[in-house]
Length: 311
Length: 122
Image: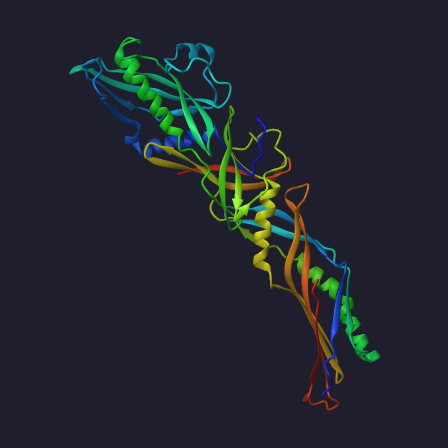
């Protein structure tokens, strides 16, 4: 992992991602099939219709050297990047192609598209790297494969992930605005890390975890800086809350009472163990003393004192 | 009617520190327990002299104030609403798949607070 500071990270395991793909496939079947007929090439019209017969999945790892060598790549791609690479895998892609009005034999087979996730101005850019098809509808250097089928699959794969994001979060009653600063593709998880602002910019994390907690299916990490901001804002709702009160009476002589009210917390600090925190407490105290008249009927008692403390 | 007697209220330490511990988390709230308040002493200073009887009354109240406040405060276990579930969005075609964290657990990971759990996909 490269070093960068962040306030909030969300990691989602491969199983969860692929469960999401399965759900999307079931609920939005039409998103997984379509057809294109680009502008004629050298006077000939080419059509590619595709249908993913099963839900595709993501493999959070780059293709091995053998598969990478077999992939048909865009002209500007030669080397496999060393980070952020994952694979979009469909076990059964059905391809129906036509050259002019002549249909090619229908083919069905496994397809793998290699993609790279890169940070770009607070968002994620998906770079299509290459595609491999188990069964080609025509020769690997044919116009329809090189100019229609492969570019379409690369675009489809890239479109799958280009809007990937951590949505603005509501945390502890505060709306957190996130700016993506990091994307990690590791074999078990896809991790997105962001800086965060809550009203005003929060300090980024001073330190990074050594490793992501990959034993967790889904995890969120919150920096001390963001936690401090969130808790400070949360505590404000308790300002003005009565903490305690007490009274004591000497019969026929006097009655005294006090109450203490939480005014505000100061210097909230998250502990070395981030599940703990401490803060200075500013308390308003009020005390009253009533003297009771000599007559025991209770009439005529008078408030003699009132006191307050401000720290 | 006698003139009001005013008090200056002091406490020791001058800025008591409260400590809290996050004890658990659900889909909707973070549970927090107040674990300590280091309030040691409360002093009511009358601005005009009181009789011994009234001084005793006030001092008795002041003497037991720290433990009363401390007991009340350390019994607090407020729940802090989390708001929307934590997760991420995966756009697929024209749809968006929401991956939410459920059955959350609270822990530390390095010096960061970790909320982990299972995935709920919708």
